[in-house]
Length: 438
Image (cartoon, rainbow, N blue to C red; front, side):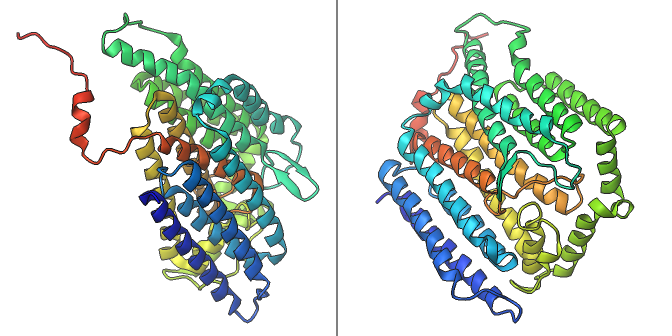
């Protein structure tokens, strides 16, 4: 068995131990309803993780060994807290986990090369644009958390996250071609073309989508995710500071227009600055602040918090009970886990075998990182009110499926990165331009 799979298996066992210990400690609380019924659910999660591990061992033996255990650890912590706060939602959580694992296995087993994914880029771009723009058109609710999809009975499908996922692949295909030509220009293989307007397409697309979300969906979180993802992908492919400045100015102007002309956005910014001015929307912010303050440095311990006191906590504000019961130290540890995921993604992007893989990796990594920041920033009152799930932790089935699908793509890309034990082996492959003596 390859070293990466040994690391993966060891860390998965550790993730199972941490999940079980967290649920067991929470069960010791006098008011807890957690009993032996939790064991089948934890066993079910463990079976799903081991199924994913076996598929990777068979299909991608040299893929990165950190990505799956990190996601499993976050998912297990989320499950333990959902179990304590809303025990009736554990079955739904396990069902969505099974669906997410199915999506993961479909990519691991069914997608032999990302060339297949790239060929579907245009179709995915059309579907992604529809998925992102459709919810605001039919949205009429004035609730605190903005719906970004549709609900079938008790099942909520987050269309916008699915749409952004598809758009990442579409724009990665576009930008990969541009970056390849830039490289060819650098080595003098083709004539330099100045002022090519095609480089603006991803920036303009990201700006238009973000502006639409701000004006019609009143959602600063989704706009932030879109801007972050497309800006990161564009910067890796193009990297022109003047274009970047223009893009940031355009986004700032769109935000200013939305805040000053759209009553809903104005109300949200007012609530953000002064939660007491709007009890309907500010109540969640106020309760989150009290809960986070009550956690202190070491926390109240699993089961000792007031997580169910905060509205919509198992999905949009799951970081609040985590930081309250695990304290500042535990909350920092969770953030560090996401930072580890971010670092692994950047490393894979740096070593990817081709431009498309590199840009897709950057897009998927920033997609997960920006969702993390949006969810935590709302809880910490660093962003205006919006509803965003914490990747792999929150009880949001569609977000979990998208997260595991993106994780499978990252693992597929990591499988194609050659292992070089001695970096000096790369030196003969580096092309150096011949310079005549001056």
